[in-house]
Amino acid sequence: MFPKVFCINLKRSTRRREFMEEQFLNLNIACEMIDAIDGSKLNENANQFSRLCSQKFSQVCGGRPLTDSEFGCALSHLLVYQRMVERDLSVAVILEDDIRIGMAFKLFLRKLNTFSRHDWDLINLVSITPSIPYGEALFDIYRLSKFVEPPGSAGAYCLKLSAAEKMLGFGYPVRYASDDLIAFSENIGVKVLGLLPEVVVQDSVFQSEIGARNFHVSILDKATKYPTLP
Image 1 (cartoon, rainbow, N blue to C red):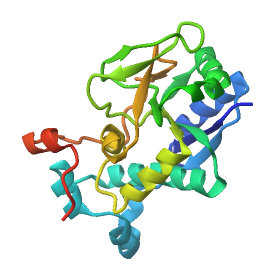
Image 2 (image 1 turned 135 degrees about the vertical axis):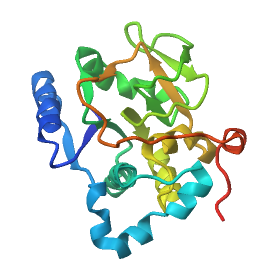
Image 3 (image 1 turned 60 degrees about the vertical axis):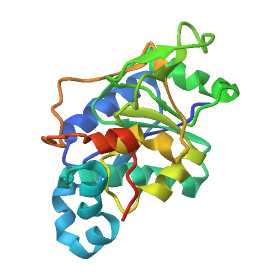
Image 4 (image 1 turned 120 degrees about the vertical axis):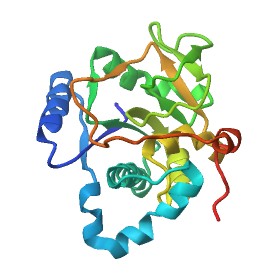
């Protein structure tokens, strides 16, 4: 039995939804599509937005304000964590809607329950951050890997329930982009590993819907990773 698979997609991004649904259909993989929170509409409910998100803390913790799209993306990932907790899902795989999958991904889903003997909380499936494989092969030629630095990517990952609970507890008020929250999650006790070779690919056909970030990590951020909230 496959683990639960979620895919986050903006309702207005119909081309991306069709792209993902076609892949799941061709591979006979069940997936629950999650309607992403549209950052462009957050200001329509300013009171709710101010309760959930903090520009002040995003500046303090990340060294820059977040865009509305980044807030919406982060809230969407937190929504999936909430679904995991509410349904008591021991593990789930979370994909954004620009991920290309194939038979290697299906094999990963089939073999995931055999990973329990290894110590991990989150397996990041796609990242530009280098990682070093270690240990025996989990299946076929695939091995777990350790990142040389925190991987800043929320495009595709596998998450245990205990990690989802920690991410939820830390995630509000939203002050980190979803990529950054995963990059720094080890600081809240979430053990992050990779998998090599990668079993998914981020498709370059789709341009990011987040927009320009102009992200700059200060020396303080690099040293502390998680500045203390005021």
